[in-house]
Image (cartoon, rainbow, N blue to C red; front, side, top):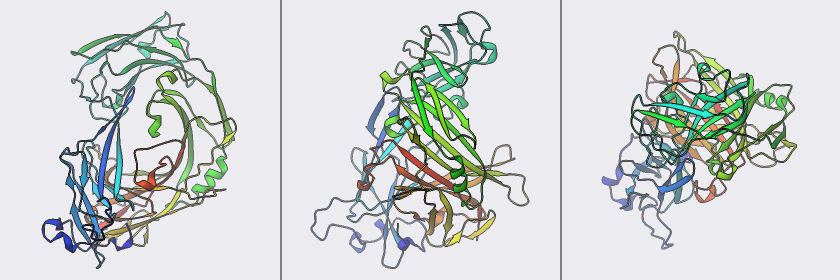
Length: 498
């Protein structure tokens, strides 16, 4: 959205109060037969396999923001197609659109501002299609015959792809002798949900129920149960005999921790203490750059590490759970509002996601790192600032660094997340509650003024993305690919005043 997005009015659906012909971009009066503005959402269920279906948009909303000559916006509600698969309008000039999707526990408003009339959005969910919650208190007892005796360095994990559940075997469930691993009866709980859902999903025959063995951080064995449907309150699972994972692949990459640390020095507010880690994952959703899946190997990195060379194996390649390598780096700061005992941890970070590259590949983290966020020309560089409640759309800008050796743009896509800070249940820290997620090709955003409520505190997270969306220029978010690189920064905490 351009700076003309300023508005002096609250959210009002003007389409029912005035003739549409009074609005710029309504009706194709120039006879060009352009398609009207529209928004389609595809649901991608990522499980053992991936399944795409049109998302049922019933009960959800979409509103287009149409700029007026007096630098305000008209709000134009979109119409739902008869099959509830698409939002359409009578607009013929591209306009920003705010819409909701069926997020849990509550829909999160999204604001997309792209210079194309047709948007195709992907709603990717870690799930098997038709998922339902498991009964409260339902238990599993898992037994896995082993291929070799248990070693002192071994650990074990139950991992269910499809229902997306993960639980480590407790120390008392791992025998010191013998060739059989058997759990005590246990219940999957919210903390076991890889997808972050508040209740575990019911396991079905469409899932892969796995027992994984690790030694010194590497997956060394996998046992799978025959497909089954979870019924009743107690389920007994016997897997096939565990098979060894051959460490027949090599990851060989180079990096420069000193260069990364220098880039973080420019971030405002200042952050500190560089943390670096890496992982190799067998990813069922690798086609959309999702790195959820069974962990193959992982570890940390130090400032002395100029590279990484490790052997690993992926026993799931026949299922097309390709390997995704992730390099994750971050620095952080802690802010405690004056007069409170509720701190919040805020971060800056740079990540890189790719399928394992050729030996000697240099990890340069090519996406620009956001180093400063401003709102209405006020740099959010010092925690504890005050911001007067806006009467017009709030204009947010993002400044990013230029990665060393960069020969092109530092980002293809910019995202902005608005978080309200609220005390956690224990009352001893602040949690971040997302209230808006915005996306644009530009490093600036215009946000509806009603987002910012007097007396409330907020932080903004700017995200840069380079790669990953080859058809972004056509408004196509469905097509994804690796490699992908990202940078992000949490702004200073600010409090809205009347």
